[in-house]
Amino acid sequence: MQCETLENTPDLVQAFTEAALRDPERAALVHEGRVVTYGRLAELVHTLAERLGPRPGAVAVPATHSPDTVVAMLGVLAAGGTYCPVDPAFPPARRQEMVSAAGCRAAVATDVAPELELGLPATHLSWEEEGGGGAAGDGFRLGRDQDPEAAAYILFTSGSTGRPKPVVTPRRAIAASVRSLRGFFALTEEDRVLQFASLNWDTSLEEILPALTTGATLVFDRDAHSGSFPRFLRMVERERVSVLDLPTAFWHELVLHLTEEAASLPDCVRLMVIGGEAVSPARLADWSRLDTGRIRLVNTYGCTETTLITHAVDLHGPSVPVPAWDWSEGTRAPIGRALPHVVELIGEDDELLIGGPAVALGYLGMPQATEKAYVVVDGERRFRTGDRVSRTPDGLLTHEGRLNDEIKIRGIRVDPAEVEAHLAGHPAVNTVAVTGATAAGRTTLVAYVVPRPHAGTRELDADLRTYLRERVPAHLVPSRITVVPQLVLTTSGKVDRKASHQRYATVNRSKETVDER
Amino acid sequence: MSVDTTAAAAGRSPAPADTEGVVAMFRRVLEVDEVSADSDFFLLGGDSLVATRVLSAVARTYGVELTFADFLDAPTPKRLAAKIAAAR
Image (cartoon, rainbow over all chains, first blue to last red; front, side, top):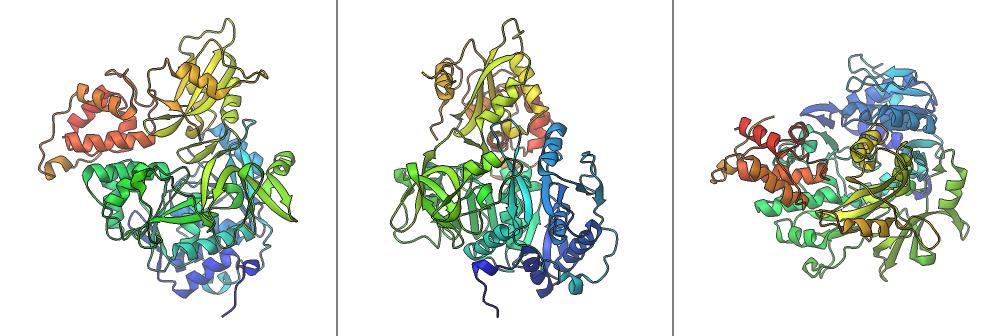
């Protein structure tokens, strides 16, 4: 057997093809109970790659919870192209901005989402046609001659200018990260992994890719997204899901539900991965009191710019070191230790810097932003996370706060300046401050708006909400928009977001506090 | 929309659906006092996450299992109460 090192991690498409060849009859995907085998999936991927042609560049793919998106993703990668997921539910203006920022020259159209309406030449993904029958033979070659430095995918983070910021991730980064995660999750062919995360965010890749390069089964089911926990739990049991990867904010709600119902998770679940924001010690204490001792509860940390997860730790379950943590004392949960492929450095102001093969190439078409975020320290390129951390002697990191105003809304990074830039574009708006506030146990986005002189302010908050909904995805629309006479300024004359919130939140109806994180 | 008898199955007898009950539910879940029969949950600061708390509370109290899509379609106490009543 060939010895693999981090330097020669096989390409992702090669790893998938090898898993597919090992047992082509095995279930790769289950969608609403219907099975797609590894053999069939490899055939569809191969057919699409052939139709896209070699090196198709950045390809826009409608991102939906469906096997089509997985076929399109792997098909684009197999052709040597760059996967660029676009949520059909995003406003058309946002979708257009995304594909032009990513430099997409082609698109994939699927039966689930036929119309991305981006004005790009589309290759239709069809489940009807038979493949060339050569998936097993020819497919084996796919991924063999890929350039590890070529762009594998483009995903977006929040940017202060109001335009989405495209992060370019090379093939070596995703290959290294996925290989590390297969080991950390201890995935086997017997595992059944739920596809829960939105396909716009890289969390979806940490569900899809470790599973499909192991020979495990990826489960798609509409009951995962119904908003009803009884349905969710019945689905987990019915589909025999063994691995769940949930946003921490959603896990908090799940634990509240299980606690109120005095219920537990079905026996099939062996691994619960969470991440995206700080874990509540109160929910951890609730979780420890439930019948969950057999389940590995794993906290994770990572940025899009450093590819999926870089740090992880078992918080509860069979793999925690003895003595286990006592969450009832309000202990803050650590974010984890560096995974094997990660080179970690704690820099000035206790900022976490990440090096190693999983560091992305940078922000496409934004050399200044890239230069600011990616720095060379000790001869190695590293990403500045903006997160302040503390480190125990055995390498366990705890999050201590942000070095800038970025906040997390339902686990998604939001730069308040991006929302401010959009609101300031409305003709009735003079100045605006956006910040995070904690209400009903979760972080929400709040906006304070000073109207232009003589601008009509009647129903301005509702107008602004509509205005934003037409331009940005839902996580960038504030929960509350308040029209105020003026904002609080710092001594240097800049808008003080938190002080503005504090001034007006105290007279507000809700019992919210300023979010300190 | 499908109907489930969670509360009934657990041996509890579900309460009749009433607008006032749903108003109280919104207040508790959102930690906001100003809720009326016609207040829109999502304009009061509710999002898909807190919505799961309302859906869980509805299942527990009224024995009706609604989905997020049902809630989007009936986001005020008055309309949600009507939806609950219709589903029983």
